[in-house]
Length: 394
Image (cartoon, rainbow, N blue to C red; front, side, top):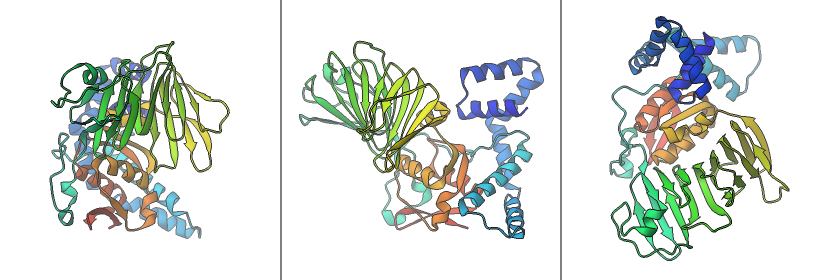
């Protein structure tokens, strides 16, 4: 049953593989009760009921008991370890209510909204309810001075080169086919672009893609700052290269995710399918080949890399309308949320930053939805102060 619970969880958060999906379907086909069980625990109504039941349970009691046990042993635990144990204690209580091994961040029913713009308010009046999710938004610059503000969901390079109007309805000056283009996605934005070779790129918030209007005959090369998901069109005669501030990735026709924000201490390359070769740094002699389901993490300060097995569907969940957290500290979670919802934040206590979470939040829900989940799970309070989101203990 534990295995089935894991498979159901992965289906809900969108990280289930085709093989695991078949395994779950085979289990469901054994009898009607199995299928009814899956339908029941996966339905939004059931998840909402579990959340309401969880509200009635004192999830702080296991944490208090744990503190007393630790004190009785005469030892002191590091803050991060202790807080992680508290979160798992809260998770264990929810498992008793739900009857299945699924611990999710559940949105408040009726509060999720479609992508939209933040309501214009004065900074001093900013409240949690004013913060809205991001939307499709980008600005295209060329080195000849053309500037296009884009608000459609997608963009095709041939549309810019060969049609009189772009998707936003503006009539740009003529763009030279060999000049360099810069697509900037702001905080609170996302964008999808199809390059001239049919390669598709999804850009996350606060990211930038620099690419030629037309690739050369012998290679295809782009530069990325921030986070992007690539579905590269396979052309053996023209290898595809992705450069970041800290890596060079040679692509052999594949799908993968690259994350290299300037203010992140680590750069990540995660392979979903196909094959890529990564040169971790300019001084590294050689390259590292990745297999599907593997992630290379490059520590910028130490200038060394590590390899690990990951679930690519979790890493790329942002592209499917979800934030999925797997034992991530709140400081990392808030960093990602602030880019998407476009706000500044501050912690009242540095120890709060190390509280770890496991769960999923709808990407297009209002920020208040994510806040309500985090507040309940860790006994925190989110408010606003001086135009910033302020996180404190209750």
